[in-house]
Image (tube, rainbow over all chains, first blue to last red; front, top):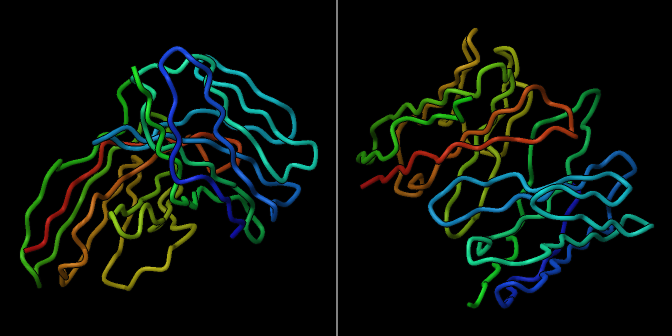
Length: 114
Length: 114
């Protein structure tokens, strides 16, 4: 399974932008890059995903490097509610079909200071 | 639309017993996957079902099993419980299993084995 590497933890001040990096040097051409986050005592929550182009949604932006070996999740204005563990995940096809399997790494614990 | 519902929320069992956990996916979703979360191992994939068929299985012993019903509801069973099975068990659903689809997670069942 393709692997991702993320920093263990990051800190941010409230109202400031946050850039969460992810390395995925073994990514293959059909792998989608997904980001999920997990707040305390909750299941993971979808944040954003992309293939090659940068993506924006109401929660965040995803910047994907041209060679696709790294990506960055951008929270434009961090709030205290954004404090969570953020997971960068590659989803890829296995064998003859797609798969719903997510391979979670250790993720990045984001602390947001008021 | 109701989210993914997992029951029960908390469960306490003793070693050697068996347990069944239930997951009701979002209406219209046909894919259900299960994950185990522990402080030491993080989130690990257990298995995935689509239209009552197991499509994928993680690296867990045969004591862990699951099934999916015709209404897409799913159950997982753990027999001969061990202390190490204490974990948060999470269920996720999605419309299908394409790699560009997002997964919706429930809040999980916290299982404690004494």
